Structure formats: structure tokens, C-alpha cells
Amino acid sequence: MLMMTTIHSCKMNPKANFTGAEGEVKLITLDPGHFHAALVQKNMYRQVHPDVAVYAPDGDDLNEHLKRIEAYNTRTDDPTQWVEEVYRGDDFFAKMIAEKKGNVMITSGNNRKKTEYIKAALDAGINVLADKPMAINVQNFELLKQAFASAAQNNVLLYDIMTERFEITTMLQREFSLLPEVFGTLEKGTPENPAVTKESVHHFCKYVSGVPLKRPVWYYDVEQQGEGIVDVTTHLVDLVQWECFPELILNINDVNIVSAKRWTTDLSREQFTLSTALPAFPDFLKKDVRNDTLRVFSNGEINYTLKGVHAKIVVIWNFMPPEGTGDTHYSIMRGTKANLIIRQGAEQGYAPTLYIESPANDMAAFEKMLTDNLTKVQAKFPGVELKKLETGWEVLVPQKYHIGHEAHFGQVTERFLQYLKDGKLPDWEVPNMITKYYTTTKALEVAKGNSK
Image 1 (tube, rainbow, N blue to C red):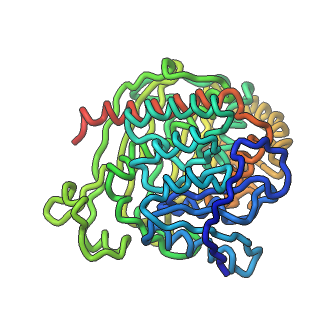
Image 2 (image 1 turned 180 degrees about the vertical axis):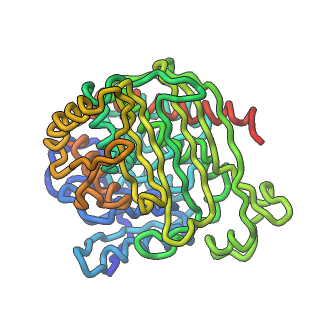
Image 3 (image 1 turned 45 degrees about the vertical axis):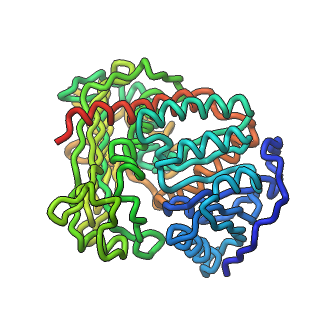
């Protein structure tokens, strides 16, 4: 059962050094309007205390969050033991800062004030693990830079939850790209034929943890959620940086936005009701309603260069996936010796699958080089094999590596806990986060001059 208590006035020292001791991390969950906040707590962590301080306005967002935690606490297999200490009130943020009931704040929800909350928490000496996006416009981006400066000054950490770095086909795409005998070097590409392309299709109506997802109504307001070009694209821009320039420090001068565009997903009132349980569009969304249809700027495309390498990012939101399908992802890295391609369509059973395709003249020599280098990949990922196809090779991945998107939140959290113990992030993480959010927010600025 979900245990809830009233928050007391006892304060913690949020700047205490972390040693990895049991229960030394005390979580604060701030206004959990998005289901990602709950996914951080889908399992327990030895270093994290089971008591979690929750600060939020009263309402559906908070109630839905608590239902998810209760489901984790009461499940049959490996139930969690979280105790949610809940404060409900419109002054939730001021109360959280005054109380300081924890040393790590989790924020995943309405993005209108997220950057402000992040900076204020860091100013107060509280570490922050934030769901993306941490900035949804250029004004937020400038504040985010100040937030990172505050984190450094106050000796606390700010980190965003980049789950896609833990998806197995993406990890293997990166791993094979680090084999020069197989991949060669990364092409520079052109705007018409980028060296790197990443495309993803998402859906407003879906299932999470086995139950239908109820979207908060503000999710459809781009002034609160952010446009698609600054939301899911955060993951894709992050992967371009992480795969193409691993552990290399990047800065905003490495980025040039060649072009960017945005367009709407149009939802009927019936579709809106199905995903929110509300019978009509609220007043704050009527600015985006035309002929009883809600127009959401949830789609975007960015063409840009990063250190001279041409990259293309596309994010599309549909209402509901066809039966038996789900969110999809396509990714290609073009090398001088081979292309590494992730496909996730009907042919792959809508499961992401990595392929290696080469234009080499001597395919026998390339195949020998590929199989000789496979052992380097297998040293990190035992059990990975290759299957020869007419067009190249399919990378066969043991089922144990396909743990699912929801489990990646636990992996990111474990990584963050290690960073807390280390007392720092890797040297490249902060400048690369700044570069990432510059890319997305600058692209939005460009796209707004080219919207259709």
C-alpha cells in the first residue's frame, strides 16, 4: 500500500557529501505532472531513502502520480516500499525551498516554469535530476546557463534524464562506429544527404506500465509543454552528440542551424477527450482551436551541422499507433566504410533493429574485418552476433538487453547516484547539455520564421 505522511519541519543538509551509504539520498518530487516522475521510482535504490517528499498543487497530476507509486508498491513481483510525504498547495515551490526535506529534486511535468524551479533549487543547494526538456525557448536557455553556473558555485549537480543512451541498439550503433576498420570515419554529409539522421514517431494516446495513459490537459499547450522541436528532439540531439563525438567537449560555436521547420498535429474534440477525460477544450487552449480541432505544434525538423557534420532530426506526433505497433525510431550514421542503421518498422516487428551495410568493393575482405572486430563488441555486450543478409548484416541482440524504455529511467538514476558519490559529472556533460539546449531552442527560433 502507498504510505503518505504529512511533511514535518526537519531540514536536511542538501550539500552534504555523498559516500554511497544506504539511504543517504533523500528525494524531493516537485509537481509531478508527467509520468516520467514516477518511472524514476519504479524500483528501489540502496543509496536512496524510501521516504520521498512530494510538493505539488492539489489536482489530477498529483493524484495520478501517487496512483503510479501505489501500483509499484503493491505489485506482486518485487514491490517497492516508497513512503510519499505529500504537501498539497499552490505555494508548493516556496514550501519546498523553505523545508529542504531532501537533497535531490526530481522534476518532470509542466515545463513553463521548470527552468526557474531548477535554478532556484540549485541556488538553495539542492541537486537536481530533471526530465527533459530543461528549456523550451531561448529565454529558458539563457536561464539554464545561469542554473549550471549556480550548480558549480554551490557544489551541486544538475543532470537531465537521457534514457535513450541506454537503449541497446543505440549503444551498439555507437559501439560499432568506434571501430575504424568497420565504420571508417564519420562522413561530413550535406544538407540533402546528412551524415546522421534520426527520426522518431510518437503518440499522444498510449499505454504506460500496462494502463492507458491519461495526459494532463496542459500537455497540449505548447506554452506549457513546449513545442515538439524542443521536446523529444532533446533526446535525438543528445544522441547525435553522444554517438558522433563521444566524451568530447562541445560548445555552441560548434552548432550551425541550417534550417528548421514545425507543423501541427490536429486533434478532434473526441480524440482530446479520449486522452484527457475532459469533455471540452479548456479556455487556455482555445487560442489553438480551429473549427473544433485542436492544432498542436508537436512536430519538428532540424537540419544543422555539429563540428561540420551535417545532421537531420525529425520528430512526429500522431494521435494513436495502429494496432500492434507503437512509437518508432529510425537512425543512420554514415561512415566511409559502412553505414549503421536502426530500423523499427513492420519488417522488424516494430522492435528497433540494427543493421550494418557497406558499399565495399571487396565484400569478403570487409566481412572478415567485421567478424574479426565483433569480438571487441562482444567483450562489452556478450552474446551479440551477426546475421548475414543480402543487403549486409543484422546485429542479433540477446533478449536480456531489451529491458524496455521504462527500465532506462532506473539506469539513468543509478548513473546519477554514482555521479553524486563521485562529487562531479564527467567533464563533457555540462558543456554538452548547454550545447544540446542551444541547438533545440535556437532551432525553434529559426522554425518560427518558417512555420506552415
